[in-house]
Each structure stands twice: as structure tokens, then as C-alpha cells.
Length: 241
Image 1: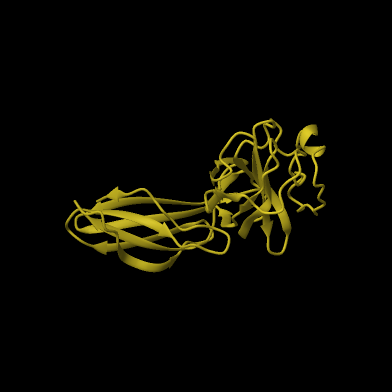
Image 2: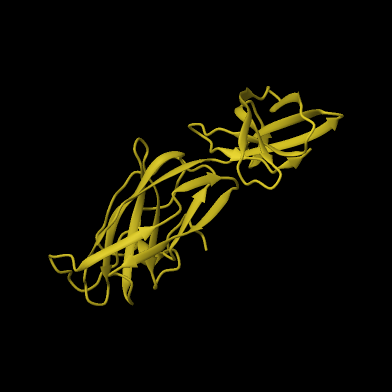
């Protein structure tokens, strides 16, 4: 399935619409198929739910969506457009059992726009009887995936921790080490609660930061990164010393 090019059936459907495309997206805006004339009054609701916190970590993410409400029946054709506040139309999600492109999945490409965006109604009706439905809007936030590592060592009662921060590169499609703000945390053995050991630390240009302190008992430790405008917060795996 070539997601960035809709099938001829979608290109030929009714309710023609024209929408500018973002520089990073080449997918045409899907619109609803022709069918019996729709009633003037919407017959019910059609709601979409999608992941609302998205972290780009590979060239393509295929995320499942779900519809609910009165439109969940044979003959449903529904589309929501993903719109960015400054970049306009970015993407879509839709359902139509006659077209494999509208299979209820949201394809996120690594060069898609990041930031706060909203899936907005683009039309929902039943192509068997022309019944239309009122659609919901869903805000989502797309950011780059972060990566966090930790290593540890102990000499007598001195514990040394080393944290590493990474960020996904959309140009190289891999993670690279970068400077970022983070926090060293600890968890007592048997507990599920992480507590702050040292906050507000910054990794250097190589993406690394270290600290050492005296503590004789064994604890779990992790290095966590804060959220930024382009990346999500993330905690590393735990190390025990």
C-alpha cells in the first residue's frame, strides 16, 4: 500500500475539496464518496480516537485509530484531516471498506510537522443511504523521540552514575547524542516510586553527564530527560548499585 498516493477511487469521489499541502507531505486530501443524497440533518455522531502523544522514532509509524458512535455500521465512510495551526493540512485518517487507504490507520512520517495539531472533521456519511454524521475533533501532539541511557559503578560506598541523552534525527533516521536537561533519580529496593537524586543536570555536547555520591545501601537508579518543545520526556532503564 502506497500511503502517500490515494487510489483512483478516492481521487474520483464527490464533494471535491482543495487544500494546500505541507512541504513534508504529499498525500492529497481525501473526501467522501458519492452516494445517495444526504439528509439536511445529521443522523448521529461519529467519533475518532487516536494516540494523542506521538514520538517520531523511525521513518514511518503506523498508528491505529478507532471510530465509535452511530457511524459504526456497514457503508460508513468517514475522514478526519490533521491540521497544523501554522502549516495547515498535514495528514488524515479515515474509514471506507471500499478503499484500502482508508483503513483506520494514521501514518506518521519522520518528516511530518511536529507540535500541537488537531484532527478535524472532513465528512462522515453512509454511502448506502446517504445518512450523515456529526464528527468530533481530536487534539494531538507530535514530537521527536528522545533516548536516555544510564550506567553505574560502585567503589566502597561511592556510587558513580553516568547519564546519556539522545534524540531521533529525521535526516539520518537514527538517534544521536545531544546536550539536554535531565535528572538523576533513585528508587529504594522494593519500591515503585522514583525520587529525585539530582535535578537540573545538563549533558555535555557529547550527550553525557556524570555524578558521584556516598551511599552504602543498594538502590535502583535511572536518568530521565525533561520534555521540550520538540521532544518528549523519557526515563532510562534502571541500574542497581
